[in-house]
Length: 334
Ligand code: ATP
Ligand code: MG
Ligand code: FE
Image (cartoon, rainbow, N blue to C red; front, side, top):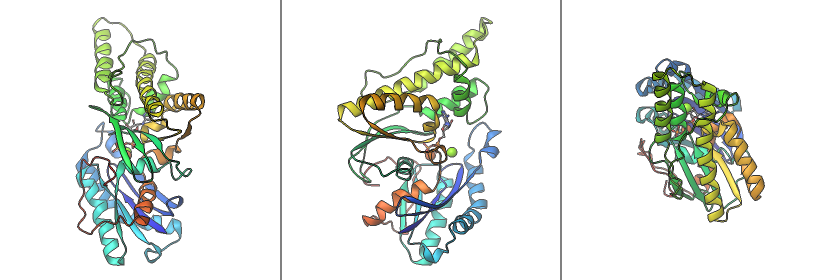
């Protein structure tokens, strides 16, 4: 089964073709980061327009790279939420047009399910598993009993981990997106600045906005007293605080539920310290850990095609009146 998927939920326009949910025939990703950089974040209206300009070319490129025509595609998958509503609509309209014209099934996919299924493109997932999803807009611990069965155990009550990285980076005058810059600086600093670890008494929920405020307050107070705080030390201290909480809660869920498989998902999965600490702890507890390569951690359509394959074989097809939904909780009913 060959599925062509379209992903336009944020600032990446992507089209991919994947066979049987696992074999990537093409995965073209066009990032708009350079356009949004100067605004310090994604400008939704600009993102929608760029998707409209690019979608046809990227579709063409994905077909060419796979050496296929639309007649050789079995179904069209598309991210229908969550994300920027205008951006989602561009991909959804394109997907509907192709599905209608070719008379093939349309399959709407949840974006976060996609991030989790980036792991399926690496090695077949084994169930039951825990997925730690850490992206620009989400921080969630998800329990999966089987394919497409999602139970959100805990999530952030305010900022996502990636969002906290980006906001702290801005306070440190680093370019957008800030995650990779903090990661790099942290390696040259020491985690000597005291910062809070929030909600440690709550089982699985997260909170990162207090941590972000603590960083900003510490920087302001130091500036007022003309003290110098090394950016490297702040980066290392912040990163340690984030990773401490993520690792603690992830393995709390793993131990509580007696799980043997862990998968990591979302852009923050690129973080070197998070990878190192999760690997260390997984080895210690004899838990298998899968981490997708960087190119599959951030937004791409191949991960959407992978989810769609399992929806396809279960007969979970969408109707052509499918709508995009800006905030769509992850559940088995997606
Ligand atoms: P969502 O999937 O929740 O809608 P998104 O798709 O915008 O959000 P991703 O593309 O998955 O998010 O991830 C982007 C985030 O990952 C950014 O916040 C970025 O700063 C962060 N990030 C990327 N690399 C690193 C890194 N090495 N360390 C920490 N954070 C990182
Ligand atoms: Mg992005
Ligand atoms: Fe994403």
